[in-house]
Amino acid sequence: MSYVRVSILGTLPGGEVWSVNPVFDPTAEFPGGVNQANLDAACLAIANLNPGASLLSHISTAAVITGARLEVRDDATDNLIGISIQGRTTPLAGTGTPTKPAQVATVISIRTDTPGASGRGRIYWPALGSSLSTSTLRIISTQVTSVLTEMKTYLMAMRSALASSFPTIGFDLAVRSRTTHTTPHAVRIQVGDVLDTQRRRRDSLAESYQVVAVP
Image 1: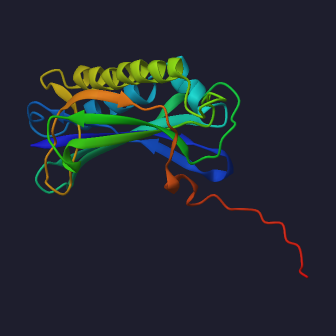
Image 2 (image 1 turned 90 degrees about the horizontal axis):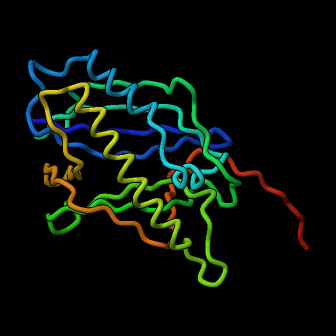
Image 3 (image 1 turned 120 degrees about the horizontal axis):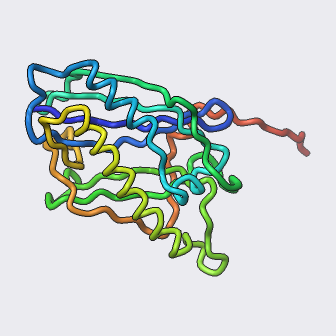
């Protein structure tokens, strides 16, 4: 058996890159192995999907969605079986004014019926343009709702793109544990109202310093 790791690829100012990486579990094996043409078609279709308005305002005009990558990996070993990387026909920038640094993110939690860490997944969606309540410093409730519903729509569109390219295989949104080598299926998605950070998003972001001598 195998699983599919989908990566939505993007860029940020200063040469930074970002990605979000949901996982889908095929309900049947790829017939005769992974057909590269079909994998490329699925990857291109996913690359060209447009997130909803709230998701785009969250990433702001500072972030751009550039493409997608699909990895088909062996369920028992996590070894790579097939891969496709496709750029969007036209890169898609977010909307709204960026007001936060590159590593700030809204967390979309993927939950399964499997207890413990192996049954939980997280998507760190860039939140450079998210709107906060001035009284609570939390994400505005209506925006949380929009992000939640739009992320479900976005993920289900990825699932449909996979199913269209591989019509004899069903796909389920899942969480992958490389510790237990299991891929439990998602039963719900949840979004909180507190911003988080994805620290690796500034791994290559060079910092400019100003210096003053002392005393």
